[in-house]
Amino acid sequence: MQIIFETPRLYLRRFTDADASLVFYLNSYQEVVEYVHEPVHTCVEFSRNILFEHILPQYALYNLGRLAVYVKENEEFIGWCGLKFRAELNEIDLGYRYIPSSWGKGFATEAAKHTLDYGFSKLQLSEIIGRAHVDNKASLSVLKKIGMTYLRNEVVDHCPVETYHSINPNV
Image (tube, helix red, strand yellow):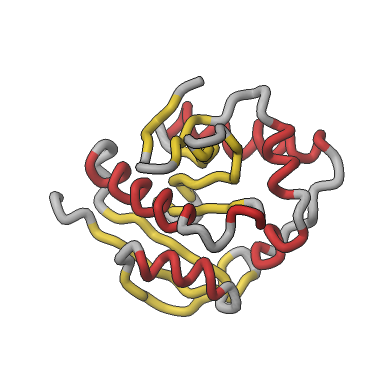
């Protein structure tokens, strides 16, 4: 297991080719995929395709990626958070997704803030973009809490979103 970094309550590690069941578990909740306009995962094979086509290649190609998030206290997998290069937009995207039982505990904010810091300090990125569906108040709140600045409303991936960004203060 390759832990990328830790926060006070969490650790974030790279997904492996054996983690399709984690992706399936996370995306099998309707409320988790509601605002990203993705179907609820109903089979592990669909999750395996997401893992092998979208998550794992980011590590090899860009040294970035969505990271599996675990609570240190009980080793519970609660979701993912991480950076992704979006070639079609030529940008680095901060994203996160958590199981409903972990909502409202500050985990998303904690992981997102440390991910932003990791992107700037360790990866020396110059700018990171964050987006959330205009109706996803909790995700929008996370972007604001971690200090990202509102840029604009737009439609990305057929979704109406608010777009935020952060600039590396050290570059």
